[in-house]
Length: 86
Image 1 (cartoon, rainbow, N blue to C red):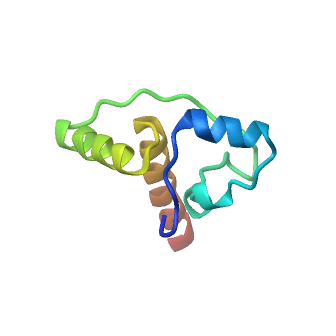
Image 2 (image 1 turned 90 degrees about the horizontal axis):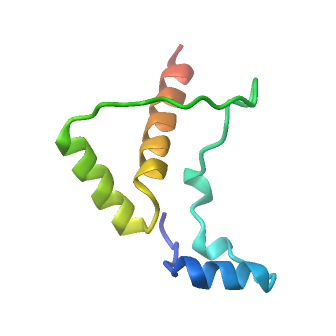
Image 3 (image 1 turned 90 degrees about the vertical axis):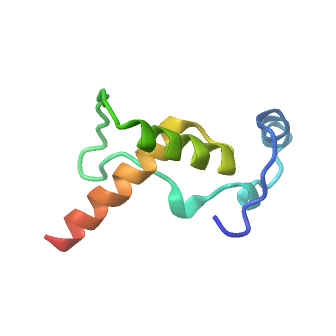
């Protein structure tokens, strides 16, 4: 996320609609995509310790994204590391 510049969602939308370049505002290295083998995504429900939720909320505020996006990113990173190790 180094070099990523924070802007509001309204400003992002306006710049996107105007066709402006937005790469400096995106953390492509942290992008989460569906399973490349199947393209499928599946909803899940989680019960998490309060400290995990607070940590995810703090990270979400710091980088101006949703808690869901933070948790998706964290889980995807862990899954990739496990898959790479096997």
